[in-house]
Length: 252
Image 1: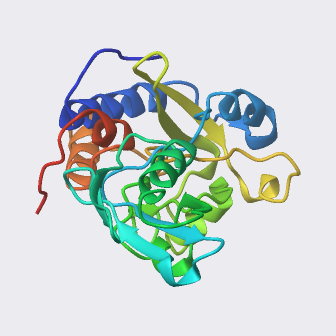
Image 2: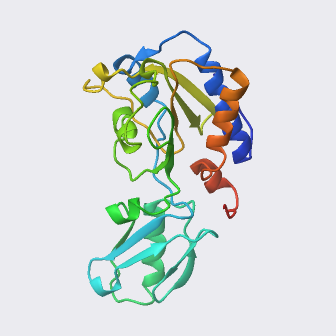
């Protein structure tokens, strides 16, 4: 199931909620994690990472360590570099930025050998990272969580939300919704994520922008259920795709 060509983030989040609703109305339980892992993982974003507003990046100089820098990508997509000043960073891959910085620093340093990368330190992961995924529903602390490049499995995501409600969580009917950039639409899966599958060798891997929902064992009224999704989804930061393609806007 997918929805396409909706440019605004609130609209996408609303559609994600509706897709979750459609998934929940299907069969009682989903396919086990090991059976769905290959299909889901095949839709993960490919290609080089590109910087986003809000990212923290590091620049390291092989021959001039005193020039090493840790910089924030501002809401306007730029960062301010020593001896160079402001450069546009958002939308560029680490390799592209490294090449541009190398060229710029040739006028400032005798032999600039440098690398620019997304900062993945623990400190950076604790910041308001624009690369976030969502864990909602019957978990202790539903919300959005920073993605620092590691392999985030469903058990790991639930642990980041401090576990599930043992009395109400329907782990065998967990819902995952993912924005597919290539088709500009959402795709969703109903997953049987019972604890017996948490130690399986093959796991579903999450990516930034994913919405993982742990439903209740009973769903009361459909309209209340959809409203719950909307109220939980809308306050969170915009999806990574939106941040790359639209001007950054302040959020409360």
